[in-house]
Image 1 (cartoon, rainbow, N blue to C red):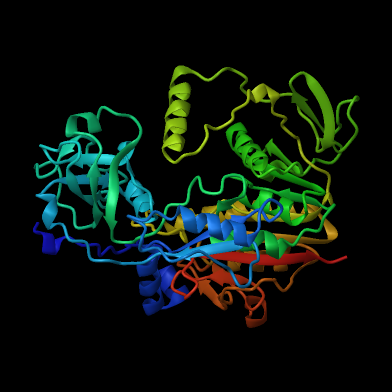
Image 2 (cartoon, rainbow, N blue to C red):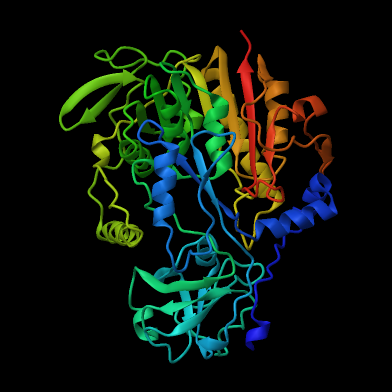
Length: 518
């Protein structure tokens, strides 16, 4: 393939069961535009500040100084968001035409997942390299292309393949060029580190990981809006049901002035520890993270706490000392064994990758020191955030989708289980915010309809700030005759649907806010 033919013109192909469903929801032209937008990265970096530790002016000055004068000389200056006080943002540029004539035919092929990270500003890390030119040397200028999965499979080419051999099809997607940091032989011997340092990209965004450590975090704008919509007040009790990695929990804690309690749940010890690490990095003391599947968070009627613990309390076990906090305890913390050799190697690789981004190693604790709660009584929380596990069909860029309609329906069913629990845990007069990072109406509008129709005393309320579009109205009849109800125009005006095609240029995202009537 000559240089003129190397470009980036991706296309999303939806599963045959999903295509007609989305066409009905968005219209044929709307779906085409949406599919095209999902292939591209958002060109706006958003950074959420901890305004208890810094100011907009100081942060803007430091980020401007950190903008690289070489690769990122194109970058626009950082600026404050007009409607969200703790958000600053920077706009990237693209798509650009990249000229590959000076690469002398040298090429590195990377996995789709690695390519999606590169499109958002990362360099190419060694684990994502799938194939190289036969005579690649350290320091060579290389074209970077993408190895897409074969249709109907999740498989890539064999790692270690030679570009130009019969074992690898010619790529049609080129995303830039860069300097190879290893020879071909060493590229596949190494287990971590940067494999290609990008020097020219189709989309040019400044990488922000590691910047302003402790003063904030990189966060998509819709995700940063969620806690502001919830609007917890200082001294209140908040539940974040699916909290990892902790961005929304810590944001809630910041909005509360670190006064009150934010209970953050997720399904593994590692995720709970990740939340604690972020809270510690941001200097927050009101965050309490627990390993728990939120579908089991409602305390069963008649459940008894141990005799030495008051009902509604949870026992922390930390460095041999015990103290109590709200939640219901379990001293069975699951596996307490030290990490095996494979897990230890995985941790070392992760820490090396973090080091390449200028980030400190993760702080890890023995699972035996981490409490596991058995649940909470009904009406326990004034505020509940349910950022539900979802199909993630709004994330950008995504160059391939394998999700079927059955997958989408099963995901929505699981979300409804979470919503049932959330409503029971919410105090009368309290507020519940439900959000997803998907464009799927079955997980968004249909689940809002479910709450309003099925669960007692819940009503939609207005959101502030309101930065997106209205939700979808109407209904869809599936092939089996099942009718999926969406929203009325009035209801649709109260939810936020962030459209990747809009001028805000965000990921696809959905937010609904409910109040439990007294």
